[in-house]
Image 1 (cartoon, rainbow, N blue to C red):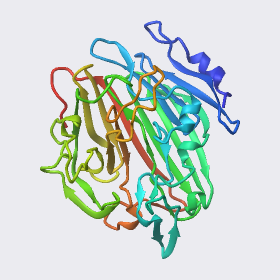
Image 2: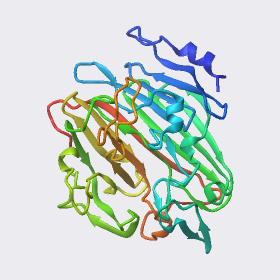
Image 3: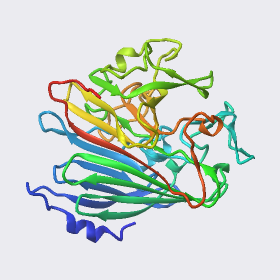
Image 4: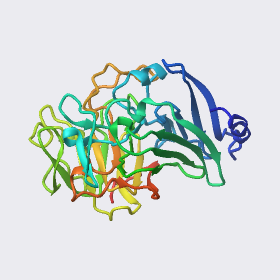
Length: 379
């Protein structure tokens, strides 16, 4: 969508320090099916950039300064559109219709059983085949006094991935002009009762994309419980305390240092767990702080979602490379996927993922960047 290119050009080069700010739009190629894809780059008054493409409404860069003021991209990217089409890693794309697992590929709503598309293990994962991460979204760019960004829209028809209800989904990427912060805002409408769970599947490394492992990262996460799962990693319904486990990040701790074989982390070990935040369901609050002792970068995360899927990039194997040609190895990044809990449609004790006609399902997650200073992360 290029109708806003002239508006974007008018916003460029307006910052007090002489740098370019605003919205820049450029072609990013065409999909194998021949659909044109644009890349949008936002630049705020402080020099932070946020970039994304229409394919999958995918974030492709977030460039922020370190303690020395040197800017680097902290969001793992891929070199071209073909790589985004090939990947199974869902790199910073919007995931849906239902992020996470649904046990036995089925659920019941209002007395109606809904049978979904099972994978080889008999589960539905991330909604099933032809996920939202593999579609070209429609885009509308905007600029207001405080922020710049784009609204992505996708219409998901009734029966899409075998889910009932025609959805109209708006996902807004918003970069603040005056501070290094961006938000992902979701709004979903339906014409029939259904379940929805959306997230962004971004991979972060605060030392810079492709810089190596997470040894220098410290995590503080305000989550006192986690979802216990069965052998297929489907929640049992039990929410257990994180106390005394490798999932307890209520005080500063590294992920890499905890990657030891165990019943909880597996063998080989890896984080891929649902943590439940301590805040009230639906409240927008700070839920995590991540510090990188190497670069000095700090990322604070705020969300209205009740939980996060914390993932340590267990599936990376060095076959994918970023725009700088650096291979992504196992545990070279982390994903912090704010969302509702997996299998919620089958777990009455979990926060509901049901949306009905006349309702607007809204959610927001914000990422704020700064410098850690002398103190480690705290909540």
